[in-house]
Length: 464
Image (tube, rainbow, N blue to C red; front, side, top):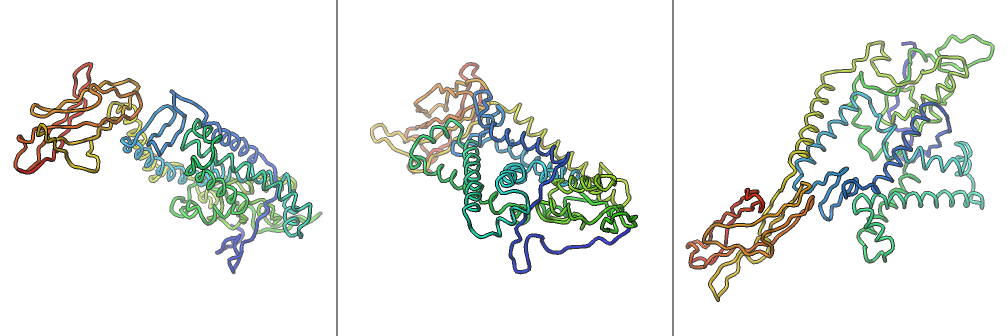
């Protein structure tokens, strides 16, 4: 190593007194920016179009919390499928560990909604209206004028319009596109809860991208702080080749350079959306967005030096060691991810029959008919049909008991949850002295007579 890497122990956007330093990232071009823009367009279109796609009669992705219905690309999950959701949630959490151990903060720089919308939508609109970094800084420092007011007003009106569209799309994921379209033409007071939900998201989205910006990555998001335990020396990072670049030295005309390839132009700092100097090594604020890579390559081409002074690399590579792609921790992560996703997929594909749940509603424990001295206990049955077929079910109780229900046989639609009230009755004189009796309730397939579900319920009655 030819030079000492400087260290920094405070955030670049916050001063000693807690004052925020506003960032004005400079414009740049490059192959990595072009690739990220293609990715951003795909992700943005996917986000806005997905709720309008119908698969097997259901919205492609629907998180209907009110009706406790969750649809994912043609598969419908219910609260009874919590175990399936747990396998996928746990698998996704470990997948994050695996991806970070291998490829660092690739998610942050390429696919995180914060980066995608800020760098490829809001920042581009801001540059289009207010100009490059120098012009934006000059405009913010200038006194209020007609020109400044008109530019700021136009920018914020466009920001609010985008934020509103985003909030309504988020609402589509939780309510459904049909319901959102229906509510759009109604008085907000008729859907006050959902209107408040949408307005809150609209406000938060606007504040985030108009003002909070990189502070979300630096302060609110915990992912950057997890780097110290998620990354190792073989993880991929955006890194500065200090062996090649140090010691730094300014480029002087007609004079042979004796320093490293870095000409200390600070172009990598000027384009950074979080304001860091990548030459100071791996930092919590770095989101691996590749902006410094493009900016540095542009300078290297101008000074006739090889590109990739800043590149995708690993600490092991920068230290002259061979990067290990497969390590014990990575193998363990991968095995766990495959096992959890495999178990969830198996349950989702092969556990698609009927699921029953029988509960006693709150309220009176039993009723006594004085006319015929019959004790009646009320229960509610919830059946979730996770198959694509309609089931017809009959309800039975043992001899000595009687079941009264409005539908027997009971038809349960495909991929839906149905509820059925049942009353299990028994003569008062046949109750034991404790006032409690046990009865087995059986649900059978009407077509085949096969037992689909059987459970024992406790009947409450008057003590003798």
